[in-house]
Length: 393
Image (cartoon, rainbow, N blue to C red):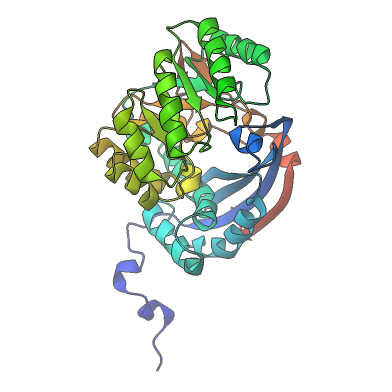
């Protein structure tokens, strides 16, 4: 007699008495969020990318036999959204019947379901939405905000605004945006640099620093547009502005170049947002290539992978400033041992019914369980594709 399917599964992977609930339903949604104004940073001005007009989101909603539900999301800018949705559709069926609390096991199972396309990039970004939903579900089951489930070190996190300082924005409007951010209670201001004519960057930065004063935390972001000599030269010129950091001065994968720059400049170097795995970030950490590490949970595979990376960063006493997706990263930053930063973008607000509280330069955790967000009717209206698996309780 041939062995049964259950007999063929190693005992270590078979469910036991500790499995109290199972995943019974998954819904994946591809949502396209239009931006009110085309967005340009240095990558556009150097001809490497076109202006950004929309952001594609992959939402995962997961339900269990006992009626618990969680929601998570990932995203892609300019390209990749349909690909993330397509890959998630292929691998999502393996979730049915799994214990939703076994998040690490599920992450590995999803990776193996799509092993031929690797363990970074689009494939694990598709997994990220599912992973985030499982963590949201787990925290909701415990009736805790996600940060409290993870073990928060603080109930609020320093925050800075990025959306008001893009290069398509005239400097007069940048200054007005800075005033509005500070009036709203946001603590710091970041502006984009990296133009082909660096003297224009310096003029914009001089105007912002003079306008907001020396006490306001100020950052700049070159979006990978300098080569090593240019980054060294401009980095020295930027020292006088007392910046919190210089972000992505070099190509995201030039870890050795970032390390040399970090050694030679007084201003801290920040990078990491474009990397798509823990392994890629480890190269930065190993080479002391960043004073401030900027992982993006949706880009590296979700919260499960982010926690691994955070442990490595903590071991080296690095500063942490997660990229974008403040709705997720507020919780993860609150659980980091060293005082972090969170990036403020208001772009995602139409997708959710709830809002984050910002005051006194900090973003505050709410008492809502999980991530603390529910999808808005507008998010449903912007849905361009959807797939469901299993049966909703």
